[in-house]
Image (tube, rainbow, N blue to C red):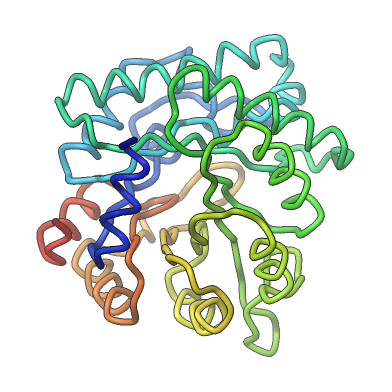
Length: 298
C-alpha cells in the first residue's frame, strides 16, 4: 500500500489529518530572500538548509502532509523572474529537500504533496495551453523526484484551474484541489476571480480528484465557504487558511491570528466534518503543533 493509499484509508476510517502550515512565508519570516515575480520560490536553491528546517519543524509538529516549496516555481513565474532555465532544478531540489526532511525525521508515512499553481506575480496572462503544458511538465518532474500527490493550490480562476488540472492529470498521481476564496460585496463567497465556487466544484467533480481544500483564504471567510462546498462535494474536505496581510510584496506577520484562536477555529471546522486541516500564509509550526496537541489529530 502506498503512503497516499494509507492516508486515504485513515480518512475513510474517520481519522483527522494534519497538513503543515505555510512554507513560503515561513521562509520569508526566517530571512530567505524573495525572487522578483516568483515570490518565495527560490529557497530550495538559495537557502536549502532553511527550507529543510521548515519541513522538519512541521513534521515534528505532527503534520501528516508536507507541501513542497513549488507553489511559486511554475514555469511562467520563473520565466518572469528571469530564471526559467532553472525550472527543473528548482522543482526537483524542492522535492528532494522535502524527502530528505521526511527521511531525517524517520517519519516514512508522511505524505509529500507537490504544489502547483497558476498564479502570476507579474500580472502576465499566461495562455491556457501554456499553463496546461507547464503544469504537466512540473508534475512529472516532481513525480520523478518523489512526491506522493499533486496539490493544486490557489485555484482562483476556473479556466486556469481547468488547464492546470488537465496538465497535472498527465502525471498519473493523485490530485487534490485547493480553492482560494473571498466574500463579495454582498457577503457571497466566490473564487478570487469573482466566479462561483459552485461552478468550480462542478468542474472538479467531473475529475478524479481526491479532496477539495479551501486554502489561502482568510480565516473569517472559511465557514461560509464551507457552507457552499459541503452541499456539493461528497469526498473529503480540507481547510488551510491564511492569516496576516500582504503589503508591497511582503507578508505582514503582526496581524497573524494567535495560536489559541487558530486552534479554536480549527476545532469548529473539525466539528463540522472537516477531516483535513493545516495552514497557509502566516500560519507557522506553533499553530500546527497546537492543533496536533489540542485537537487530538492522531
